[in-house]
Structure formats: C-alpha cells, structure tokens
Length: 288
Image (tube, rainbow, N blue to C red; front, side, top):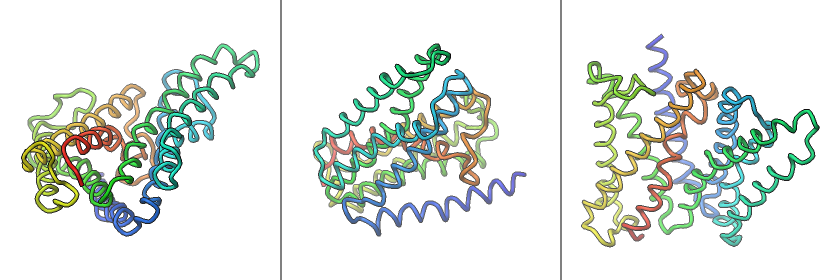
C-alpha cells in the first residue's frame, strides 16, 4: 500500500503543480482570469466537502447547489472586481446578499423542518466563510503589479512547505512524531524542514525577483525570511486545522477527487490560511 501512495503523491507534485504554475504564468490575461476561475471552482468544491463534515457532525445540511454557491460567492465577487473592474465593494455586497438569503429563505421552510432552521443557517454561514472568504485573498493578488510572480511565490511556499515536511519527515521523523494529536503522523523534523524551505523561498523571491519583491521598510533578506516563515507557519496551521475537522468526524480525507491527496479541501487547506497572511505581509513589507 505504501508504494502506490508515494507514487500518487509524486504524480500530483510533478503534474499537478506544473499545471497550476502554467495557468498562472501563461494565462495572465484579464488580470489572471483563468487563475481566478480555478479559485472559484476549488472554493465551491471545498465548501461542499466542508458542508459534508458539518452534516456528519451536526445532522444539519443545505442542498449541494446552495452550498457550492455560498462557497463560490466571495472569490466570484473578487473576480468581478479584479478581472472586470467592478467596484471593490461588490465583495461585501455579495456576502450581505448571501447572509440575507440564508436568513430569509428559512422563513419558507416546511413546518417539520423549522426546527432545523438555526442549524442550517449556521452551516450556511460557515461554508460562506470557509474556504471562500480565504480563497478570495488569492484572487485579490491578481490586482497587483507583477501579479504573476507574486502569485507564483505564494503558491510555491505552502506547496513546498508541505512537500518538504513530508519528505524530511519520512527520512528523519521516525522518532519525533505524535507531538500534535490531530495529526500524529506529522513530525518535528518535517515541521522544521518545511519552515526552512519556506524561508529559503522567501529569500529567493527578494534576491531573484527584486522587481516584484522590493523591500520597503526592512532589509531585503530579513523581509524575505519573515515572509517565508510566517506564510509557511500559516500553511502548517491551515493543514492542522483541517486535520482537526477530519478527526472530529472520523475520516482520513475530505474526499477522493484527487489521487494521492484525497479531496479538494485536503489540497487547499494550507493555501486558505496562508493567503491572507501572505497578502498582508506583502502589502506591509514589499512594493512591486
């Protein structure tokens, strides 16, 4: 069983990652509309998986189309703003409309389902925020100058962090696993190795892509280290947060759509948490 699992993981890394980077680098038209559309689709699918978690734990649920629309709302609104020039206030407007729909639509529920109204509304609010609100930060990066390089480095840091943590954990983590109960297979060695790779990528960005990563207030090496460290740590926390959800409902993967990775949420969990951290730190530390 172990060999096929390793082969599946390598397949995703050497095929899936290049495809994602090609979309970012080769399809920058309309403020990276292709990347933004991919973010919308992944957010809708991830919200559907998250709603499945909630249904297993709470028994409350929404229809799949409703959940997917809620999951897509924030990145869709941001795409309209970034790629089509719609006023940036469209995002909070979309969120307000979605929240109003969740509240008002329950008024017309059949009497036998009114007792579940509050639970269904709570599920709806949860899927509106996760992963959609977090994914919208990735879409917003497309509005920056040199967006292709900015998004490229953003994708590489969490993905490399995860891959390095897995590889180093396999090699050196045998005797230092189980520190974090929600993910007992993760090791201290892997965690440290992943953060080191993240910091190296931050340094590579400031030294080799200076047009997009011009430090504003700190020396360039320090700014790169801070960016890599903070984003790598956020990526780890995002992965662990999703692990806690899966452990709560007693499942190993959020789904089975992606071979070697599980579900969509298993692949975007670290990106979700890393996106706002990366966006804010880039805005504070760099100009491009």
